[in-house]
Image 1 (cartoon, rainbow, N blue to C red):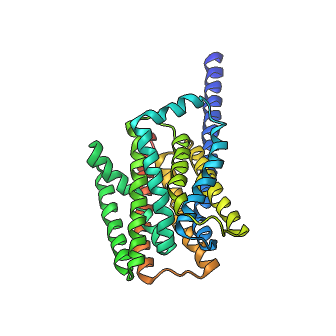
Image 2 (image 1 turned 60 degrees about the vertical axis):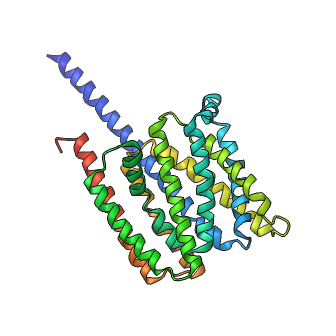
Image 3 (image 1 turned 90 degrees about the horizontal axis):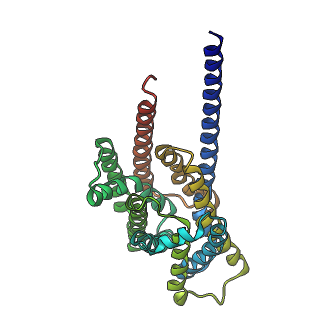
Length: 312
C-alpha cells in the first residue's frame, strides 16, 4: 500500500511542477507581449517627432529595421532552412505584404490621425477571419461575424467623419495596412513552418530600395536620424521579436487580447505629448471597435478555458 501512496505523491508533485511551469510561461508570455505592444504604441510619437517627408520616413525606417533584424536573424536556429523558405510562394507573398504594409503604415500616420490608424487597424482579427472564410473556406463563427459587423460600423463612423481628402486617403491606407497584415496572418495556415524574421528582413530591404529614389536624405538633421533609427529598431525589430517570443507561450486569444492595448496607448501618447486630440466621431467609432474586440476576445478566451478544463 505504501508504493501507490509514494507514486501518488510523485504524480501530484510532478503535476504541481508542470502547473508552476505553465504559470511561469504564461506570465513570461504576458510580459513579452505587453512589452511588444508598448514598443508598437510608440510609433505615433516617432511619426510626430519627425520633420522629414513620408517617402524618406518609409525608406529609412525600413533600412534601420533591416539592420536590426539582420542582427536578430544571426541568432536564428537552422538559419539556412529558414532562408530557403523564401523560395516558397508563401514566403514571396509574405515579403510582398510586408512591403505593402510598411508603406501603408507610415503613409496612413502621415495623412490622418494616429487614432484613426490604430482604430481601423484594430479590426485586423475580423478581416483575417473573413479572408480565411473566403480564401481557405474556414468556418466563420457567429460571434466573430457579429463582432466584425460591429467593428465595421465603428470604422464607418470614423471614415465618414474624416472630412478632408487627405484624412480619407490616410484612412484608406490604414485599411490597406490592415488587409496586408490579415493576409500575413493567413500564410502560416498555408505553410505552417513559414519563418517570419527572414521574409520581414527582405521586405524591409525591398521597401528601402523602392522608396530610396523618392527620399530626401541630404538635409536630414541628427535628431531625425536618431528618431528614424529608434523607429526602425523598436517598431520593426524589437516589438516583432518580443511578440513572437511571447505569443509562443500564450494562446492566440490571450495574445490578441493583450495586444489590443496598443489601440488605446498609441493615441494616448500622441495626445499627451503633442495635444493631438481625436475628433469626437473618431472616439465614438474607436470605442465601438475596442468594445467589440475586447468582448469577442474575452468570449473566445473563456470558451478555450472551458474546452481545456471541462470540469471547471
